[in-house]
Structures are given as structure tokens and as C-alpha cells.
Length: 422
Image (cartoon, rainbow, N blue to C red; front, side, top):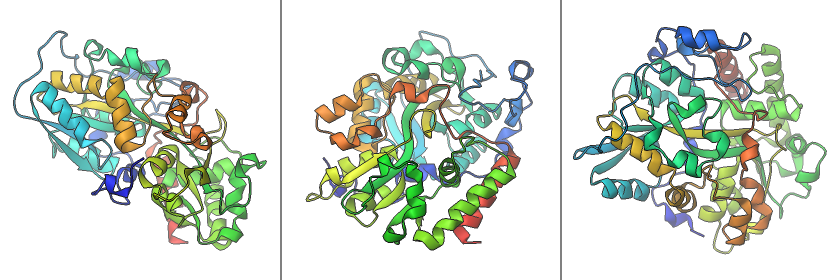
């Protein structure tokens, strides 16, 4: 277990700022002409995103178009210069990146961004010359339409089939893994302190209802500072599982339910629960599974008891699950090395070290299981539910995916009204 000094530069907005509210789609990066092949293969009921690329859903896979051929197989990695990793702040261990540089005898640097909106804009304007970039699923289609990414030659990435969960080897959002390899997976649930909360939340008929019955914990309750996550929580509370809806009535109902929390518990709207829960300054919080993991391995006080931290997430099909990816930037001058980085980051040992020693966010590796982490004493038995299983990301999974510009505007407007108290 590491204490708070393990990341001397890690702020309260560190890796967790990567989940902040998304802004409207439709930047200059998304002006590519629609690809006829994609349109012919889209489902009749699928919404279209930038460049005419269908909006991917777990039950509606999308094969992304290639705007150029992948590099040829068998090429030697480039030498000299600097290899640039473009990523959220504190979302990859610098030691891992440095070791990649040593392995291939190249200088490395991490260039950071605060939101995916900023990342897409900088890539589109060529304001950053990245070799590889972190990419979220909701912006992948936009990045491909804007020709901001290079297609992947799988011959350079054998670890994808060797180490990664089978359904992530050709995921619904990138069939054939034409542009990405998966980086992390996580769920959204409820985190609480069992020494402060009297209810057995996991066994309530509707665990989400605890937020609407938390008068006794006023001042110690929080929801995620994320326009999609907070509104989606209110939808799940009402047993509405269409978390990518663009129905104004459904979104307005979620807003009304969120606003109802204000007189009940005056919730804090933040993304610092990974620290406030183990410290005890927060007792009940909507939370990402990776942050509960990080709470134990990075932020639990030396005299604290990890057994007081509890996590509940809904069962499969009713639980929000997400994942992030790595892709090759179109600006790379080192395409072979970029491919090798994608393979490196999903190496079994590298992925495990990056997870356990730094991010706290689980990579979808076959070798990482809840039983194994509990047996090694990494996490207590009461937190084994923070670890996802391959089946949690099936075709029936709930994932917050890209919306149309109109839909995104509806969600963002509702969230703005919630945080402003309007």
C-alpha cells in the first residue's frame, strides 16, 4: 500500500480529470466527408456521427473506415528523436514510459491535456506532434472522421490476442481493432464508509435510493462532477437504462431528480472521492471503481482500515461500464515505434505495474482477477467488486457513448442547470 506521498505531483484533479463533462461534438476535426461504405453497413436505426460514421453501441458494432493503408509488416523501429505520449495528466506511470524509451533507445516525453475536447482540438490543429494518444470511446469516431489517427497493423501488436480479454480484441466500437487497443476498464457505482453509513446499501431494494434518503448524512454526500455520469445515475435510480437517450423528457426528469438532492443532502459535486472517502471527509459518493481501488492502494491513511470502504455496482446489464484506449496519432513520425508502444502497454507485466503502482484503473488483462488481487492482499475481500470481469462488457452492457450534437447539447444544458442550481 502506498501513502499520499507516492505521487507528490498528483493533485485532486489528477487522473480523474479525464472523466470531466464532455463538450459539444462537431469541431473542425469532424468535417470529413461521409464514407459510403460505412453508410451502407449502418443499421437503419443507428444515429450518425461525424463523417457519417454510425454512433457505436454495445449491441450495434461499428467497423471504422480506413482512410489510408496500415504500415507494412516487418519494418524496423525508428531511431533517434523524441517519442511523445499524449495523455490525461497522471493517467500513465512516467516510469513505464521511460522504460519503453530505454528499451527502444529513444527519448520519451508525456504531453498532457485536461479533457478529450482539448485533445481533439490540439490534434486537429496539429498543435501537438504526438506519436500515440489516449482516446475515449465517445470521441473515437470523431477522431477517425477527422483523420487524426493512423490505422493499426495487428502484426505489430501480438499482445492484443495474447493478453487482452477476448471481446476487447475486436470491440463493438472498433471492430477488428483497426485503430485502438484497450487501456483501462471501470464501472460506476456507490462508494461508502461502513463505519459512518448505517444502511446496508448493497442489500437495499434499490441501492441508488440511498442518495434520495441521505438526510442524516448531509454535508458528507457527493455525486460525480460529470455531465453524463450524474444524470445517468438519476436515470438508473428510476430504472431507466437508456443512458444514451436524446429524449428531452427523460433528460429533464433526470435533472429534476438530481435537483431534488440539494435540499435532501446538499451533495458535493466533485471527482475527489478517491481521497475524501478514505480520509473520512466524505461518507457516501457516486464513484468509479478505479477510484475505489486507488483509495486503498494510494490514499488510505496509515492508521485507516480498508475494511470500512465499501463498493456496490449494479449487476451486469444494469451497470455503467466504460473503457479507454490507446491509438496512433496521424502526426507520428515514428509509426513502427508507435505500434510497438501499443503492444508494450498491453504487455502483461507492464499493464499490471502501471495499474498497481500508479493509475489504480484496471487494464482488461486475462491475468488480473479479483480473486488474485484479494489473495495477494492488494485489496480487501470487501472490495473485490471493484474488479471487472470480461463478461461485464458484453453486448448488453450499459456504456456512455457518443451522442449527436443535439443530444449532447441537451445533456450538457441539463447538467449546467444542476450545478448552477437553476
